[in-house]
Amino acid sequence: MYKYASTAQPIFSEVTLDIEEGWSAITGVNGSGKSALLKLISKELKSEKGMIIGNDLVVYCAQSTEVAPTELEEFMCTYTKEAFQIRDLLRVEDSWLGVWNILSHGERKRLQLAVALSMPSDVLMVDEPTNHLDQESQAIVIDALKSYKGIGILVSHDRVLLNALSQQTIMIKSGEVLKHRTTFSLAQDAYAQTLSHQRKTLGEQEHEFKKLGKAIQAQREQVSLAKKRFSKKNVGRFDSAEKEKINGAILTGKDKKNGKNLQNTVTKQRQLGEKMGTIKKEYVTGISFEGKISKHNFRVAVEKSCILLFETTELCFPRLSINVGEKVGISGENGVGKSSFIRYFINKVDFAHEYLYIPQEITEEEAKQLFKNVDEMSSEDKGELFTLIQCLGSDAKALLYSTVPSPGEIRKLLIAQGLLKHPSLIILDEPTNHMDLDSIESLESALQEYTGALVFITHDQTFLQNLSTKSWVFQKNKEKPYTVNEIL
Image (cartoon, rainbow, N blue to C red; front, side, top):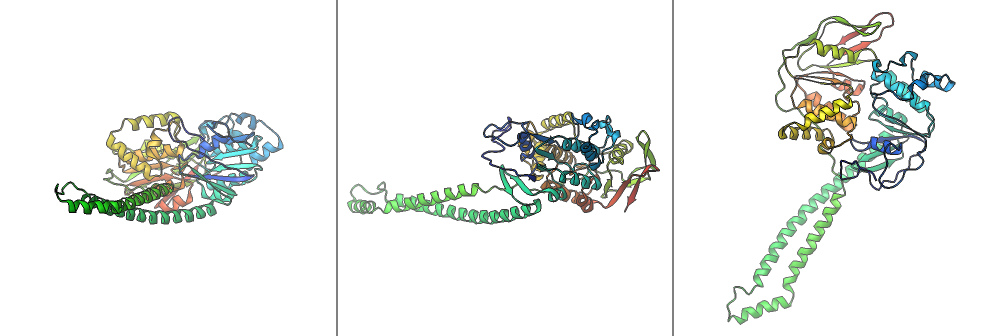
């Protein structure tokens, strides 16, 4: 059993789980306890009851790329055959040593994984390993992880990665841990069938519960009438015949029959209610934009220019503009300058009205400030915020009072807080990073309905294709500056 210090209810209770050799995928909504389970296995956290065995030599590759691995320098300075193979496998460059802060998040992730794979382990745990990675890098990481021999544990929202690696799937649903000895997609199908059956059963039970409620009401009225009939309160003092009639009815037990029927029906409804309580109801997800979008003097544009990305590399682009209602998807390899361009874009454009910008990652200090800002909101705004967070698939109150919110939950909080301002322009850098699949689909549907302007960077091809009305494609060139092409 394990629970956070800030919560009364345990995250896990009475869980028995065995994880076999090969890759096991762990899935669940943000805040369901996926990362906590990894930290329990790695001994970073200690369970309050029970034990975990077989986890003597564990390597944990976290999802955050904010801090370089402590073993990084040792790995980069190791010249064994195995070290070179790992560096080749993940295409790690010698020049990456000592420049962690200027590497793209995708380059950091590949380097972080290389260090994890180089360490001796019986169990390798990776948390969201394809966050920040372009398609080519995703394929590289999949091949690298396939090479691991041992017990692999994977937490991810990347459907391609999950299906490529998973041999068994562990689903965390409302505190319950479900294990399927099959791939992620087949496990999803099996769970969907189970959920459909549960919903049908719950519907039938709710109908029966209402039916019993009506029966209880009718039986209470019968008992009330019987009490009035058997009462001698309004019988005259000398009306012995009526008194004898009432005594006869009481002696034959007619007054007890209705009461017994009522008691049985109440018991049956209570038992049915307890049975209904064992079927967990899931959050209703899906957000929509209400209220007026802030007006902005469109079109928004940046003029033709070149910006310096690194000491010797430039990014050059033509005049780029956005009209109201347009959804611009930005794609390209890691390290080609997409995030740098967004920062340049924000600094150059004169925004007269509200806009929402959410970066790839948020630091611990920024997260603390975010929670402070939310705490200072009015009760009305907090109510709207709670609704938005819940529609993105998380328990809003549990999130706000958690001492260790997941990166995905923090991202939901950022998005929900920003949407309260009804911005005329939304700028998102890798919005699907760290978010669970249900939340990604909810966000995608909401942004499709959004009537303002949208600019977003993503490596999620499904998200890109479903949303973008035009694309800015960033390209690396060996003999000339990196470039941006606009595709309508």
